[in-house]
Image (cartoon, rainbow, N blue to C red; front, top):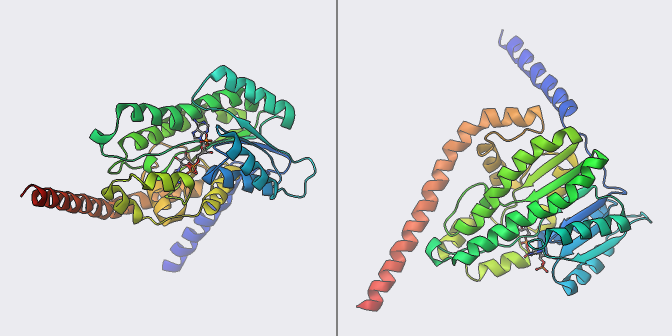
Length: 332
Ligand SMILES: NC(=O)c1ccc[n+]([C@@H]2O[C@H](COP(=O)([O-])OP(=O)(O)OC[C@H]3O[C@@H](n4cnc5c(N)ncnc54)[C@H](OP(=O)(O)O)[C@@H]3O)[C@@H](O)[C@H]2O)c1
């Protein structure tokens, strides 16, 4: 009897697995595609551009600093696939500024490189400080770059994707866009905002055969990360260190794979898988297997997360006690 139940169960899972692949969005090829990467002159964005070029796409890099853009372009050009049509273009623009100018820029790059197939919103910045040590302007700056920058570029590119009745839009959030951590009141809020946008947008654009991918990178070894480290509170450093440090090439490959497969969520590593499962909420699913994983693992992962939270709270308490002891020593 046990064998029959087991056989039925295995058959059921196999059927779901096959159906899952049939229902999942079709994987796209980047050969001959045009990929626009904001923040393409550095870190994860540059690696995304290199990886897209390797897979045969023409690439447009968008960032502000022209010199860094040119350096990145030279690097991306070394990784072109064996495709004679491929070009690498760079445009200097600020994703937080004039929307009309951004629309014009998009039109111009499409005239040169053909219609955009995939938009990767990777331009972003981070900062960490305790809430009361964060200047009010920083809250606004984070929202401007990390959230509104993605809104403006997506707004400028979407009409073209809708006309083509196909396309991909990637929004690069962060693990800090899945859970709030000490020191990230400004940064986390701006990355959480992307989730609301991504979930709503996915529902609107699916009839046009456009897939949205929301990426949640972990700590990644980039110039931006190195800059953030300089002023990170001790608590934030200790808490985030426990997740390890990833290489931008690895993160970029994973995001690009997920984008090509049309997955809504892109995460990396065991912590990434756990966090994405716990925080799935009402987000769209990309396959039946993914839904099954979430339904079966959410409770268990929530249980495990309580131990993480206790560890984080303990770290904060310890740092607080150390600071108090130091200031008592100084005043005595
Ligand atoms: N590194 C990590 O640990 C990590 C973890 C999770 C998520 N992320 C996210 O991943 C993305 C890339 O991070 P990264 O560490 O690779 O950053 P990075 O090395 O600092 O690169 C940031 C890129 O964004 C561009 N940029 C910044 N502000 C811009 C603006 N207003 N307009 C246009 N371009 C702008 C920069 O060029 P210009 O300065 O020349 O404009 C640069 O090309 C960010 O959204 C970040 O929040 C990073």
